[in-house]
Length: 363
Picture (cartoon, rainbow, N blue to C red):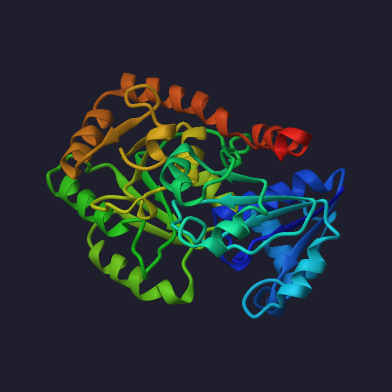
């Protein structure tokens, strides 16, 4: 079978890109898989993208081919139509826009509660008819997006490297992982620093430290600088662009995981849609204390494998209670490790292979 995979933002190296490239790895073992590059991605270099995606996501993409394609901004409709006909199966990570696909079978992947085109225009609805299926990364995303994307759909949770992430000798670390995105500030690192300062100055986390890790591009440096300034005088450590091995070690050594994406937000698109970093922390036995919004409530069961909060005051109280109760810490740590296995890469592989073999049910 000949398979095409297109993600217009491969160079952002985010969760959606990991999702799509894992599909590529899974299917390339028994099929011919081609990663389609539009004009922008081609300009970055096929070899560069293949190498970076393989290393950053720890994937084997040797059997895949990264090729030029008539997709993306400025592409020709006729060229695209004839080009895609040679594929038996197409996967496309949509950013909210779609085109009419002409592969044998066509699958959209949606990572966030996109408003999108289909429900808003006749042309949008017509283009959507060409897609056989939508796969969502969580029930939260599906519930908040499907009214705008009226077609057959299912949920396949993202692949998380839970097999490679293990508990280590635990330290008094509170960890949070998320891009230092200066434009949107969507990971709320500023809120976490403020909350930690309050706890520290109240004498409740004197032996503890806060560790903030994540990607940081050139455009994020001003925000990162502001965060470091606000953290002065506190045991707060920053890990911009931390490599994979060091991040796994940090997960293993940390005891508590904080996450605040979606705090004071009403737009579902600004909440955590699934929370890969939370599940990664859980695999390491790092107990999540996370906001009770978005996809977090799907993975964290309050009091069983972590703790959910609705206000910053809740977050502070739950943190203090966990720090002072080792039995509770041990119980939740064990629970979150067990839960993390539901989101393993092995399970993802089975779901993708099952999807491809659905045949008539697929249409």
